[in-house]
Amino acid sequence: MRQPRALPRLFGSLLLVAAAGIAAIGAGPAPDRSVPDPSASTPRPLGQIVPAPASVSPGGAPYTLTPWTRIRVDQHSREAQQIGTYLAGVLRPSTGYALPLTDGPAPGGIRLRLSADERALGDEGYRLQSSPAGLTLTARKPAGLFHAVQTLRQLLPAAVEKDARQRGPWQVAGGTVTDTPRYAYRGAMLDVSRHFFTVDQVKLYIDQLALYKINKLHLHLSDDQGWRIAIDSWPRLATYGGSTQVGGGPGGYYTKAQYKEILGYAASRYLEVVPEIDMPGHTNAALASYAQLNCNGVAPPLYTGTDVGFSSLCVPKALTYDFVDDVLRELAALTPGKYLHIGGDEAHSTSHADYVAFMDKVQPIVAKYGKTVVGWHQLTGATPAKGALAQYWGLDDTSAEEKAQVARAARNGTGLILSPADRIYLDMKYNKDTPLGLDWAGFVEVRRAYDWDPGGYLPGAPASAVAGVEAPLWSETISTSDHIEFMAFPRVVGVAELGWSAASTHDWEAYRVRLAAQGPRMEALGIDFYRSPQVPWRSG
Ligand code: ACM
Image (cartoon, rainbow, N blue to C red):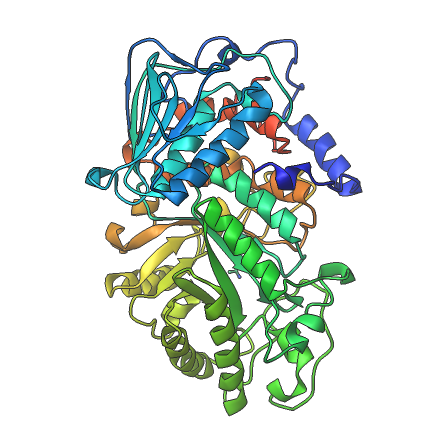
């Protein structure tokens, strides 16, 4: 898991220097580094994790990791073995312990257990039991075991995340955590089109998201400014359409092998990739690559600005659907996940009738290749396919009419992914001084991103229609991993909690204290998070 972090990274951006300076001003005095993290010497309370767990029964003496600890994994599950190896990879550098994997009895060890009988734990739930006699992680499915490992990390001192050997003790408070998620869809989106991000940058973000039990990575693979995935039947999409980005840099694209590498890495962290090809608008990169896709047969120039709403595929042309079929066929063949996201937002250069006609033709292509449609919520202005998910990105002051249209679709069976822009668009500035990001949806401080309820968010939409939440990070102003970290963290942690934790646990005052405890952990991981003055950070 440390490989992406260990790679050389660019810290040179002036913007970043400005970000750090202004963040420090915004957060008041820098933390006093002479104050030790109290959790380094006493185990942190079992419930002190993010996302908040469903149930905690503290009790008994703590579990202590020792140089003789073994990690015992049920031999018959390859996935459990891999999770054991991943856990050892997290713990070995900082503890300096050997932590061998074993399938035999391992008294006093860490046991990873998969049990089909644990029905109540569902697809992602787990139980963590800690006592001096041992630490047992139990799940019904490997994803649950992986999430249990994330909980275990957070129960150990933050220094466990460091790359070099640290002083212990390494203790986990005694008791039991039993935990299952509220929503099955807990996502983050990365816009790799406005600025391109390398495979290693995406892997790093995946590792950071996994710590908080995010389980979907939505990749916005195409937009006006760049096409980022190789498509064999239309090669110029990537080689020409991918050759630039906002501001005119070199852009880039993923070869099919690289895209598969991202998917494999995400799968090893139990994130499913949801690829998006945005259509019929946001398509200048495609239109620039192939003149024949344009209604007038003339390719527009590549675009490196930040306007929206000026491009459209040619809805009446038959070739448009050959193109869409080829792209979605190749993408579906590469993508083991359930979903293909077809965009559908800001189609301001497409008439309403054309938009509806386009979606009527394109959604069956998604189904033909065995996938489920996801679209931005404008899709509800057409006829969403059966089983489709609409991703809502409106604001508090979005018109009642537009909200009602989405709610109506939800009542008729369309699932909802909630991404309200004035709550969880990670590219919104925190405040007027934030040196990165945009502000068209307003400023979004950490409390605002956390303090709302997905279940009751959209008037008239049944709570049962909510598949989950997703935090998009648009990249008009974002071009480095440090930018990603500064805008995503800590807001995405709150989104992870909204997605995972029961509504009954929702409490800003309690959350901000648990979030503060993540500060030393994020520091140990090298995450350059925004030190919001709303959070009582402490140093580690
Ligand atoms: C969007 O922000 N245009 C989905």
